[in-house]
Length: 537
Image 1 (cartoon, helix red, strand yellow):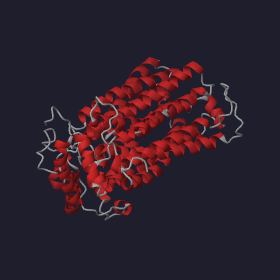
Image 2: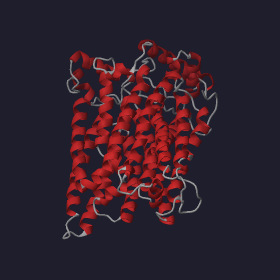
Image 3: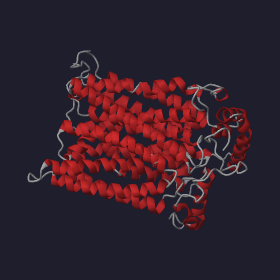
Image 4: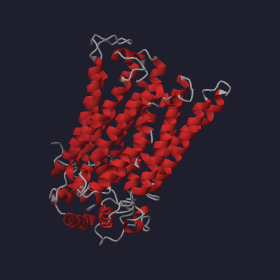
């Protein structure tokens, strides 16, 4: 495997003027951008005439949704494979393999039906182009699904208890940057070349190669997580990694703390049956993980990301105006994600999700009203377009702040080290299956429900908020070990209601979460990554 534990990042640096902590965040953020890039990439490819002709399908065909959604099936398989690889070989080797797999899938998509360099792209594939495209989508899903498992684990295991949310929210802001980049390239080329030109859809696909190729070229210069190295009894490598991150002065204390946590956890292995069967040791946190991803899918924003122009079309916006407004929505989405990483470690994951659902449910009720008014010839177009567009922009911002990063963060915080990668895999598997269903059914909803699709999302958001309020504990501001105490207390209490477990203490962030980390003598609360100022805390 690449980058064996004993040689990971010895004294190397990607950018000498940037701290190792910031290098890790930058690397992880760029990797997460792959997830967003695919969504932005496919949103306009779905309506490209050359693409539809090459795949031999019509724009109204349900196969359009199938091509989009099989990617998520690949993600579910990639999640299982990468979690096992991450536990056995390390976080870094698993990330490298996922990046290489993404590259292969992307190339298969690019060459689908390619047999002529002419703009029209007349194909001699005799109807086989769609097979290559479907296979490429699945293979790319394998890679991106694996990245979505391992990167949050890698990042959280290298972040302090009070900054895990900020780190992951910043990474998911880059996810939106990927979406924005893909859509901007796609829209610009489409306007320049037209929807009949094959390069208007092939170029955005191949540009995606920039991300995995760049990341594979620098990954050897980053450290493996000391927690994983310690779990494999690579004590010397764990020391070296800690020295690389913190310097020799702090590394010894960090190592002693990490060893104590490792000894407390023990080496008991956790299998998927322990997570998925009632009575299993990790069944409760797994249900929290599963429902988090189900509820995120129920917000409907997988559909808004992939089918942005069609969503604006439900408010009767003409095609080109809908496409430009979608770009504006993505730009707003990117900037509002700044609020996510500013708020997530202050107010916590649970509060952001609950209030996010309230805001989304109300927004979709308004969009249902505007969609209905848009059908009346007596209502001026601008009377619907302006408030409808503003509402959709607002809803997108609310989703980004409340739901985008939170459900990916929670699984990295509530499992012991021996089950963390598997918990993240379960999260991606459910995300893949849920988004497979959403992206497959959304085009059918466009054709049959029209603007009533907004009402469906209003109801599903209300359910997501209700479930989160009742059953999802607040995991922010606490160590991995402290979060596991919630599930131990729930088992003793015989209830999963957050307000009943441990006197309701897990309804909110801990009172001292905004203060500095506890003194070095407390092994479980002291961070593995800490922002340093002049060498002191």
